Image (tube, rainbow, N blue to C red; front, side, top):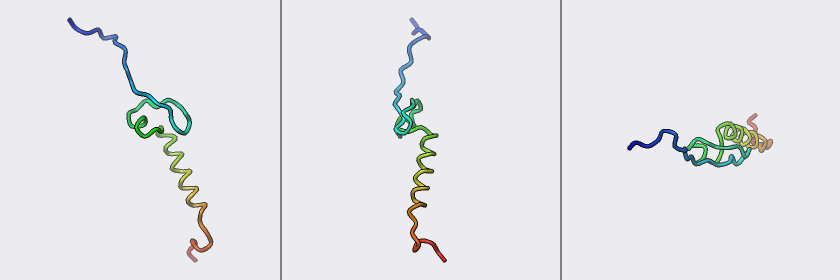
Length: 60
């Protein structure tokens, strides 16, 4: 006897830590963030690091 083809599929899903949208890929679920939000988070971190420059950090 063969198994039916219309079995329910079980997937592990989670919510993105940034936008709270559904994460479906295994990589996103493991990281806790989706690819778009991860790119935005990296951009925010770069902007924050650039904003922390002082007068002495700027080469003349």
